[in-house]
Length: 341
Ligand code: PEP
Ligand code: MN
Image (spheres, protein in one colour):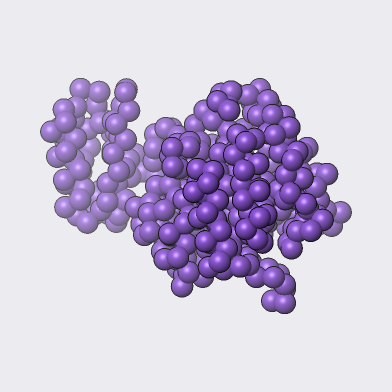
């Protein structure tokens, strides 16, 4: 339920509405815009309706939120887009975020070398997996704790905030020591216990779309995090399963403008996992910027032929600066501000 206040409503009238909504056990979210103040009420619809807030002092109208997700909906924020502050770097809004790094942390040398390249190319955040979701249980599963330690070192040296994946709740405390953003991988998108716990942790989350998840399912997954009071969620389109077999996944570019209509959350694109092939990463990245993505998460490696995982799709790290320049140029054409690199 959205309670739209009159432009003339006083602070006391706004507070009185909030108090009444909370008195029936519902949660409130205040959006005080320049023109209009809106109170979002999340809870039992019947209980809130019984308050008959339409007639309360300062209230202009009461509007139901029709989508199954509430906190994630554009309506809930009255059209105001979320801009996340991740260690001083913005994701969402005017800027175009570049999140880059290796698929997995392999060694100290590889991690620090790659992080320096990301910093020098003007990257926004550094990515790297310490715990890897692998299709085969026999494949390399990540360096675990040692990987997290190397990510902490990379952060200390470059100042880049860290994005790393959480797969198992038992690793949460360790990951919270290092991660500025917790990645929830495509395979974990519907692990609701994991989502709720990341929500409770309050740490920004990068939520990837499941391999065959609809946009409603993605937004409901985001709702699990938001519901716990964590407002910092980044959505990521990373390719979905279709009948096409000529390439790894189908990057659903239509999802970007549609998600931006449905939700106030920032939406980024992962061209690497969609493509599975290096030569497709640039064209897909340019396309993602053109359709209005808020950023990119891309895999790079100093020597992709030596990469332990996802080497075939990794951009050569030394090419990152050129890549960033080209993708940013398209993002600017699509309305983003020129990056202050
Ligand atoms: C990754 O980012 O390395 C990864 C495994 O991504 P996804 O969950 O999208 O497959
Ligand atoms: Mn990968």
